Length: 140
Ligand SMILES: [Zn+2]
Image (tube, rainbow, N blue to C red; front, side, top):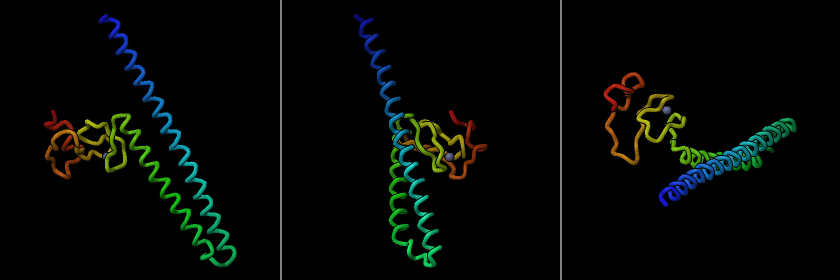
């Protein structure tokens, strides 16, 4: 019976991992679709600006360009949300520098900034503690 339980628990862990992989693939596909959309709108904006200039009145492009810039902004916000979900699934969070950092990392491997942990008590650190000063020195 114990063996059966173990097998079941192992199988459900594998199922969780598979489910997570499916989720990641879905999210990555959604990001790709949005990025293509952004390219499409940026291209349209460029054409609109060019044609208005060619026609001698750049203001002709203004209304459409403003509308499409709004669409691009919304798409970028959606991508940011999707990327946040992907980081969550990977057990990562974003550093202020924009790089992904493991949730339990004390410092960003890219820029060396100290990382704040929401789940634990915040460790008091010098705001300007660089990568040389902080990592390893006295940590754990
Ligand atoms: Zn960083």
